[in-house]
Length: 165
Image (tube, rainbow, N blue to C red; front, side, top):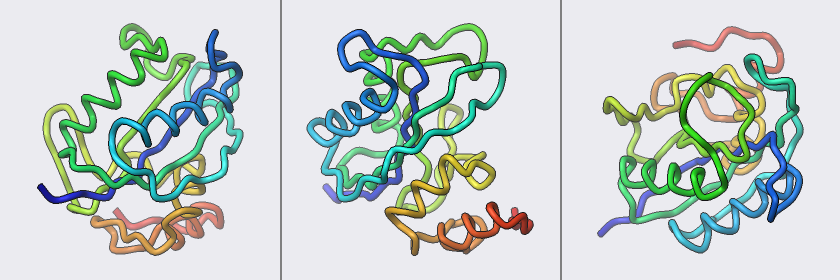
């Protein structure tokens, strides 16, 4: 079975009773992903970011480069199981406070679309808290939609240049 490479975004804005503050939650999740879902090849620094939506709590965010035998749907299922194990409940209001959020941002297979999953992540080009960490670990990775590298996308986002769609 062939291995795939993925960029995974991680975020937390709630304390966890076992792991601690959001930064510690993100660090623990990176370790668990590395132990169970494949091999983590690179980890970004953890950054702090403002919340999206109605949540008032600041986030800790990071990205990792994962090599895994899992297909995108299988990886999504495992990431959702990990979120649930950290106490995330998938009901109610979108963008609510959560102990852990794990998203598949990109994969080396290009574009993947199903009713449950879109890769590339549809909003990643507009989110500095995703692009910054992703560009830190895989600056030359090309977005299959725009053809731009993560470094170029991040530069355009942070300098106010339009990003092609």
